[in-house]
Length: 103
Image 1: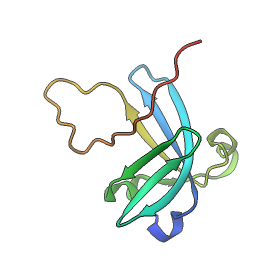
Image 2: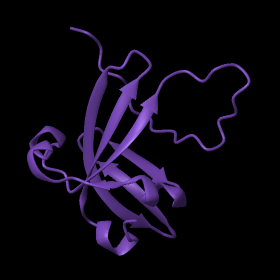
Image 3: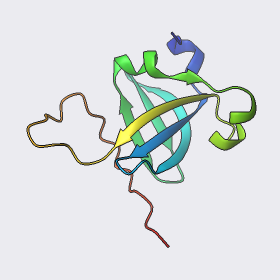
Image 4: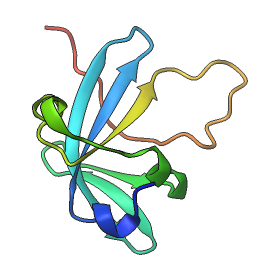
């Protein structure tokens, strides 16, 4: 498991996978905001509060995959989509990110 002190100030790519298996990558930095870790992407104006259990899901980025993930130090894969009926939003991470429109 990655330690919190190892990721503060480092780059993190969020690998967002849609229900249709489309994928986008959003890269930012991990910072501390009070007692919580946050993902910050200043280009998109996004600040996402990270829950404590996220640390165990973050992976180190190495080798040839690094350029694909915008040279990030770490990566976290998240599923993106509509919640099925009857599923609570508890445990979900609200991102505020918008899926890119098809051009």
